[in-house]
Image 1 (tube, helix red, strand yellow):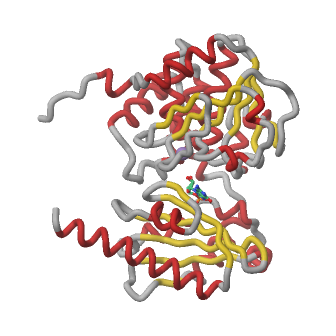
Image 2: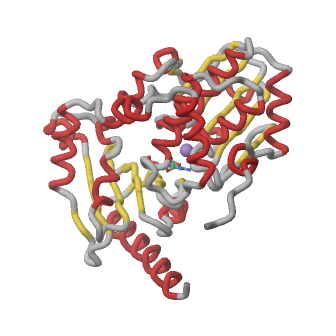
Length: 340
Ligand code: 5GP
Ligand code: MN
C-alpha cells in the first residue's frame, strides 16, 4: 500500500501570498468580486463561495461580471444577484479578481481603482494584482477559494460548499481532466460533509437544458469532420446553423466535449463564427496533449486540456492551420510516450 499522504498537504495550501491576501481582507470592509467575461462554473463558483464567506465576516460585497452566468447555473444560490455590467462606478476598498489570467479578460472597467487582488490558476497569469496568488496546480480556482475561506476561519456553509463543488466539477470536466489531485477529492469530500448534494448539482448543471440545445447539438455533430489521422474532430457553428436548429450560441456549452467520448478522438477544435471572418476557437484534448500551447500561439490561452482563442480569416485556411498545429501537438506527445 502507498504511504498515506499527510493531511496538511491535502487540506491546506499555506502559500505566503495567501496569508497576505487574508490580512488584506481582514482589515477591509467593502469588496467587489469579478471574473473573466463569459463566466463559467469555476468563475461563478469561486466568486460566490468567496462572496458568502465575506458576508459571513460581516463585510459587504458586490459580484460584477461582464456577461451573465450560463443558464443552468442560474439555479445556484446567489447567482441571480450577480450584477452584469462593463464598468464599476462605486468605490470599493478592494477588487478581488478570481479565475482570470489577465485583468483585461474581465471586460469590466474601473476595477483597478482599488486594491487589486488576483487569485487564479491559469498557466500564464500575468500577475496583475497588487496582491497575486497564483497556483497553476489547482484543478479549479474554487480549490484556492476553499483554502482562502478556511484561512479566513469562516465555517463552510452549504452555500459556500456548493459553489466550491460546482467550480471543481465543471473545471475538471466532471473529473475528466489531468489536473486532478488527491486534494481535489479531499476538498470535495469536505464539501459533501458540509451538506452538498452532488446529484442535485449534477442535475442542475448537466440535465436542465432546453430542446433547442439538443437539436443544435444534433446539427453541429452531423456536420462534424474528422482529420485524416482520425484523431482530431473539427466542429463548426455559425449564426445561420444556430437559427435553423432553434438554439443559441449559449446552448453550445459542453458540446465540445462530446467528440472526445469517441475512443480514437484525442482532440477537438470548435470554430464558432463571431461575425464575418472572425471566429472563437475552443479546443479540448485528452491526457498529455497540450492544446493550451496551441491556443497561446494564436494569441489565446488556457490549460493543457481546455483552451481557446479568437482568430480571423477564411474558415478553410483557419481549420487547416489549427489541424496541422494540433497534429504536431499529438505527434510530440506520441514521441514523448515512446521514451517513457
Ligand atoms: P472555452 O473553450 O471554454 O471558451 O475556454 C476554455 C479555457 O481556455 C478557459 O477556461 C480559459 O482558461 C481558456 N481561454 C479560452 N479563450 C481564451 C482566450 O481568448 N484567452 C486566454 N488567455 N484564455 C482563453
Ligand atoms: Mn478555472
